[in-house]
Picture 1 (tube, helix red, strand yellow):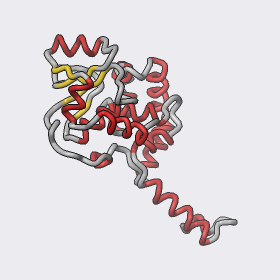
Picture 2 (cartoon, one colour; picture 1 turned 90 degrees about the vertical axis):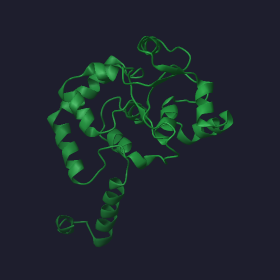
Picture 3 (cartoon, rainbow, N blue to C red; picture 1 turned 120 degrees about the vertical axis):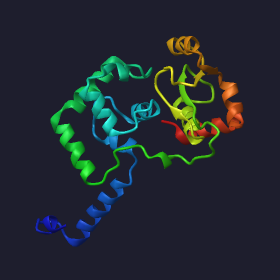
Picture 4 (spheres, rainbow, N blue to C red; picture 1 turned 90 degrees about the horizontal axis):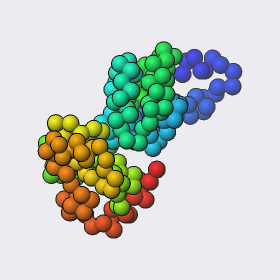
Length: 212
């Protein structure tokens, strides 16, 4: 405030508006902060995809960039090698890292908050879910993983020995093969809807709420 008050054209009202804007920025979720960094090809949808895959903090992203772990990003079906390389390049830039550190010091959110979505119950507690394929009632399919999180479950981007369930839509591919070989429980869309105890038409209504 003191620095601005000494600048020409910055009256009390203008300074107050700037302060209000800064405070509002601090309330923005990590997803929006990530998009606002201006990383090439990392828009709102891509940010949601990263979060749904289990990459839920800036620390995790910077660690991936530090290790140049392009495979961690390309293991996410919707992220190609070109986009993954751009993310790593941008996050490895010292100027970008300084910007991130500065934003963090100002109090902007650098981690997805667990309470971002209202928790419904603990019916999926202790379960680790992955998703593959396309669905009729979950578009984008990250909506399905949101439902898992709301019920106490955890979501991951790849199938491993720790994965307990794979939600498989049409065109499952390699994740489906991996799940079967590891003995992971494979769940189809209708079974998943029954587990949620949610009518399909309600899920269609939800698509409009979360459409990207």
